View 1 (cartoon, rainbow, N blue to C red):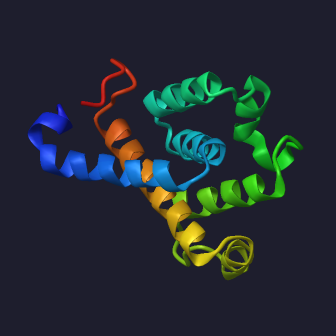
View 2 (view 1 turned 90 degrees about the vertical axis):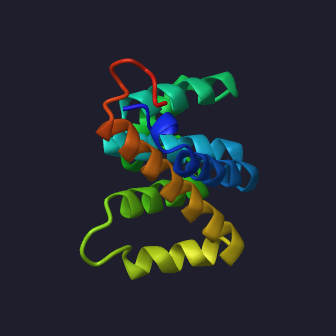
Length: 144
């Protein structure tokens, strides 16, 4: 299915959400979050795209490879580690939601606006990942 052709208004809204995040979240942090969520969701199209985008923007391959094992890696700043932890929690949202302790640490680190923008980013990439995986876009590298 070509989602962009079948439901263009819905697809445009998803892209607008992504555009909002691009304008409001630090670019380096954005690519790390997108890559991590895409890895967790098994979206090969997005893993390829976001790792390529990050490399083109100057990110090191060492850090990108380490995103898969970020908890064991020393390559990330405290803020990046917290964003990756929040990405894991929101992406793997369980019965009890995001742990309060994690939410409290995130709220202490970022302003409400910054935290809201980060959540928009995480929700946006998860939505796009779910489309990509559902539509099996990894095989032909086309989402729309």
